[in-house]
Amino acid sequence: MKYALITGASAGIGKALSYKFAEKGHNIIITARRVNELGNTKKDIESRFKVNVIVKTGDLAEDGAASRLYDDLKRYDINILINNAGFGDFCMPWEINLEKANRMLNLNVKALTELSLKFVRDHVEEDATLINVSSVGGYYLFPIAVSYCATKFYVSSFTEGIAAAVKMEGKKLRAKVLAPGPTESEFLIAASKDAVVNGKDFFTDKNAFITAERLADYTYRLYESDKVVGIVDGEKKLILKDPMFQIFTSDTKLA
Ligand SMILES: NC(=O)c1ccc[n+]([C@@H]2O[C@H](COP(=O)([O-])OP(=O)(O)OC[C@H]3O[C@@H](n4cnc5c(N)ncnc54)[C@H](OP(=O)(O)O)[C@@H]3O)[C@@H](O)[C@H]2O)c1
View 1 (tube, protein in one colour):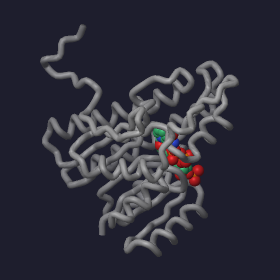
View 2 (cartoon, rainbow, N blue to C red; view 1 turned 90 degrees about the vertical axis):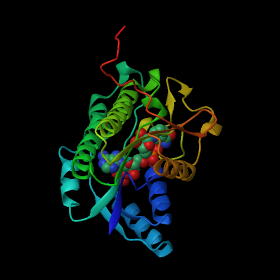
View 3 (cartoon, rainbow, N blue to C red; view 1 turned 90 degrees about the horizontal axis):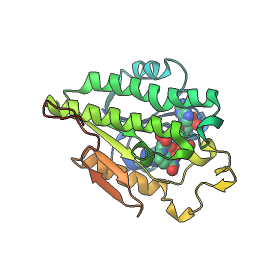
View 4 (spheres, helix red, strand yellow; view 1 turned 180 degrees about the vertical axis):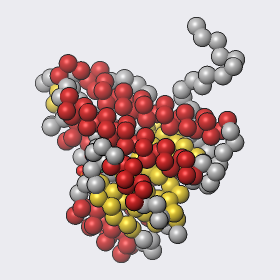
């Protein structure tokens, strides 16, 4: 029995992805720190769709937690991994709380890397899919969130790099980047208590947001497509694209 592993599934985008992939007939393994939310989601999904839902709780920002989670799930046949757990920090670079910045690096970068590399190592020859959740801020720098953007540039380039390596060697695994724009979720609560930074409401245009359910539809379209990048544009539409980072080849001429 095949499973999709979805991290950060207790709220927002990850929760919506859990419903979307279950609705499409995938058994799912959902993980986050909050046990009650995951338990309720399991109950609700299993009552609506004919799929199995496995719940695993844990703090992925803790040292080694991602590796332990992956090893603990070895008995399941996971053919889709969605690294969605992540958070932002909206502040100027000189105002950042270093402890929070470290947790962000641990979750957005380290845990995602550990899970991705183990998954890729085990499934590179198989019909398997890795989807890493980046951000529009993983392709454009926002001065109000440079550390967060840098973590997401890492996610974008790392995942595009895996896609390039897989293509170069003719392997079967597919690696994809989802780059959401503003999406309704608990993200702003974690990124900045009230999204007001230096007296400015960071997201003044509430109309810029899409629902997490719409983003989950977009993600499924990316999953089904042969494109590597799915980015949400200023019109709130999904644009499916080829990789955006330049790949160095023997013909590359450095300026
Ligand atoms: N919403 C947006 O506008 C937006 C835009 C671009 C990109 N994104 C990206 O989308 C992804 C999902 O964010 P979201 O908007 O859905 O935010 P969210 O509503 O805050 O959800 C974040 C999820 O990650 C989990 N999580 C947080 N810290 C964790 C930890 N230490 N260990 C394990 N799980 C943890 C949370 O669950 P627990 O608290 O239960 O652990 C929750 O399920 C993130 O990678 C974010 O950077 C969001």
